[in-house]
Image (tube, rainbow, N blue to C red):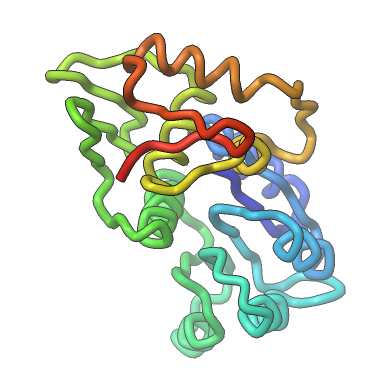
Length: 218
């Protein structure tokens, strides 16, 4: 899953990026509201972590503009502004969640994952797929209680396809969701990961739509 962290304090932004990447998210950064709005409009982020006090365009205006544009990407406001009025304003402008600084990283990660699950229409952290149990919170896949070892990229692809069950997901869309803007991606990298997934999960889990992409049946 790919996140955008909008934070003008560079040390905090880099700390968040490293911590979230350790949790197997792909993470982009934006230091001001105008750059963030451009990226939100152009890229299909799974969630945005948004500071409010930003240069060029503040978080309030960014959020209001994005929602007016019809952008439905889940947004978690992460700010030192802890007054009830600020929380209410943020939620009324379209934020999906609100967390004040200082914060515990484990709570931030849990809130972001919960937002993404809700956005995909599945509030549970466990998805049943035939004989497989996919735990998106614990980042595990189990078959009859036994874990199947997947790499971070393999799990990210499986999670995306599972959340999009019944729909074809293009290779380009998979790349956009599992890599950040700093990663150079080879043209066949998704095919390589899917081939590895099929060896581990079995050939009947992921189907290919030639010329279109991959899918898991609903």
